[in-house]
Length: 173
Image (cartoon, rainbow, N blue to C red; front, side, top):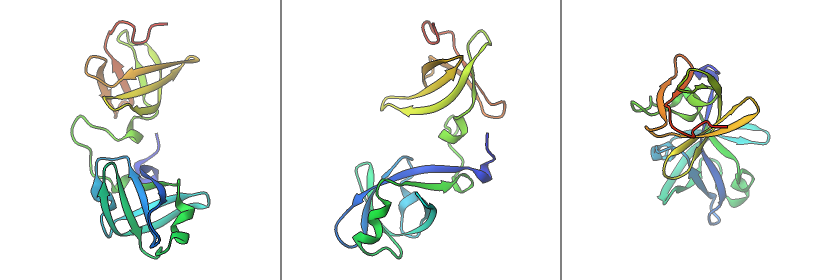
């Protein structure tokens, strides 16, 4: 797993321009809407690399923001950012609440069955609406593990592992 200082965390994706004065729709991933408050510093991951951007102002909508960035006051200035991801350094994130984790902390963790055998590593965390799902790859197979109390016995970031409960059919062939 990469060191926190070297890790970038996606906090949103830029949609299409909104109006003609440089505003653009930002779909946010995290439950920290202040991430796009006036004065917030974020990084836009463009095809040419990360571009630092400061939010000039924004207004909330359901599941998204309409934001304007300092120095980008026209539709032409923001249009190239459409579809780009918005990131922040992991070190800039507040600590997660107890029992919560950032996605970057979970990716790559080894997943063990209730019998202690390693079944693979977490390759993706899917948001499904009701609960997240770990996409685990191992031995040429893919497992979809619901992130619910009935399925997960332990998440141990320091040991780099997740232990599953003995739930019928969870990792069956």
